[in-house]
Image (tube, rainbow, N blue to C red; front, side):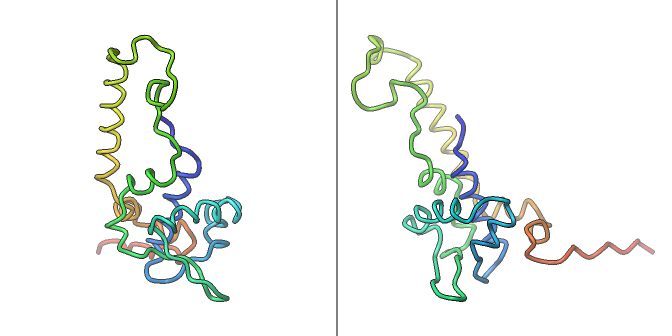
Length: 154
């Protein structure tokens, strides 16, 4: 299974907001940090806002922020909102299926089990986990200056 570019950048947008703490994050700054267009990020922002994963503040000094702690937003929460389909084979899709084995095929059950395992793993990881895994994320995203150089032990 391959996640869409939309999902990838939705996770990145949330990571940026988490790394930025309580401050509002601006779409132009996020777009510059990741090298993507503002229009693309605005498109991603809509489903995230509807799902309550991002909060927008309008106005001249507006921006976006997380409406709840990053530790409460799982990767599954994001994927569920940003992916259109989890159909791994024709038999996952609704409608007319031409395969004569659809009701007795082991492939459907195996793929469904694999997909559920995938979802289970995504539920175990939060946006906070991803941010904490990169101690220099603030610097890498241009949110803060370079980390202080370590002093040699005396």
